Amino acid sequence: MTYLVSSFYKFVRLTNLEQKKKDWQAYCQQKEIKGTILLASEGINATIAGFPEAIVEVLALLKTETELNDLTTRDAWADNCPFERMKVKIKSEIVTLAQPQADPTERVGHYVKPQDWNELIQDPEVLVLDTRNNYEVETGTFQGATNPHTHAFREFPEYVQQNLDPQRHSKIAMFCTGGIRCEKASAFLLSQGFQEVYHLQGGILNYLSEIPPEDSLWQGECFVFDQRIAVQHGLAEGTFDLCTACGHPLSEQEKRSPQYQADIYCPHCFPFLTPEKRAKQEQKQRTSNLKKILSEDQPPSSNLGRGSKMPVPPPS
View 1 (cartoon, rainbow, N blue to C red):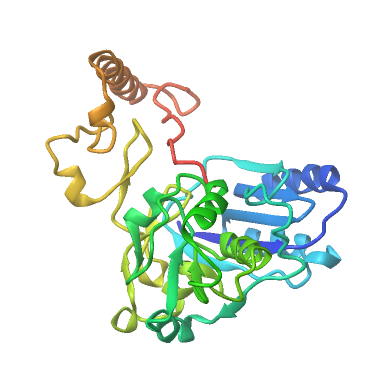
View 2: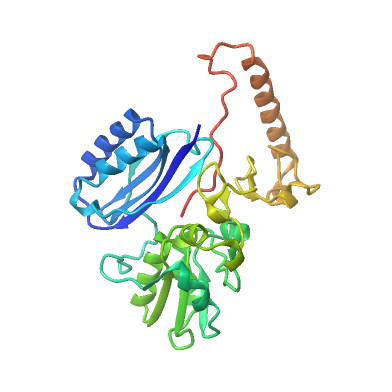
């Protein structure tokens, strides 16, 4: 069984959010769609998954709104549905920066197509900036990119104020997973006096779907906020796993570390694991294993043995 995973966003003035939330939640559940749709007065940000015909019908419903009739999507395929439930939420921002002057509906940086990206980021005068969180950067990034070492997108303005200067950094090229963070980040940089600001159109996902591996300057895999964990070129599912104790993405090499024990700890949380916490994790895993064994003898309607929600790190 194959699922279509569709990601999309748009900065646009939206109204009647409560009614949209109610209608779209009900319609998605009716069509057995799962995922998350975030709504705010500044726009929409979503990733949803389901059977292809159901995704097409949901998108058709969204596009009946005048503000969303030109909505574009980035699509991928998955053997299993990467979400457990459907959520439509109203937020103050569709991506949190907490900088009201950064308004992508008024102005943003220059969009750069994937086919033109390599040439731009190899220009020695260009500062290439990864606007994602540190654990995402560790999973993969572009050759020569600067990691701001932020833990949440709202920390980006502080990084800019402490490390960047419009006089010294005359050209800045930014990228993120799907493009949404860069739109707001570019609007913020422009509000701070930076002149030449560029960002990768459609983000890393667009680049990986358009640029063949032999021509790529991408290194590693791209972290995504669902049960696929990461994707590779062509948006094929990646090789990373997730530590169920701390939620950090794990490479195959990290899973071979002596500081890794499945479902208990990994190299990222092991140094902070007290004996009490370790004992608690081990007991939790024993309980989970017991439920799994018991569930094998239960009818399908039983709740025993159902997996808990995967602790994916929250998107910024």
